[in-house]
Image (cartoon, rainbow, N blue to C red):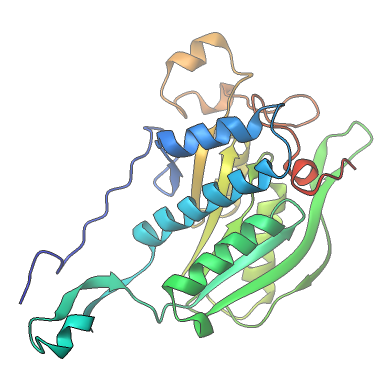
Length: 271
């Protein structure tokens, strides 16, 4: 019996930070390069969707490797017809019985959730994969400051008991949307879930502060941390060292350097 794949140790590449053990800011040149192109003012549709597809397909790959359970498996290959004993792969694979839910946070999260849902259908038993939908957007006051989130409706397909629930939302800006979405599941949907995972392209220090306080159990993945409006001396420190002095949001609470409003660019609808 082959032993090389009896225990598959996946190693996550991430930057050093002080935001807590549940926060994973990836250190991935491939994804960073795609994201830089996506955020460029010279990038338009249909390239935008192609880049988002590549980014989220790779993010789901990373998250499944690092977060999803595995099990010892014996899988016959085509060569088993000629070598009944030797033509069988034995090793640790993703447990296909794991229940997973991808949550569409309309509108910026619609396409990322579809990509994630589709990818999960290939690696898990498709009967155990679901996509839910929440119509949600940031609520602002007269000064255009985010004061929470407006939920105008949702279509949730049932329990999340023992599920891994993913929230693929490109921009982790203020955190209000994610906090409200997780609240819906924890407070109104049968559970508990095995874990909740936020899947972002960019996050800010302000976002991380809000969501980690509201939901300390939330696991967060991001391609990039943006803290572009922080004082100059803060840039020389490990992220999170001076968390209270880090700033990634401008006065209208858009991310800097960021990439603009992703709900707008993904849908080519600038309202």
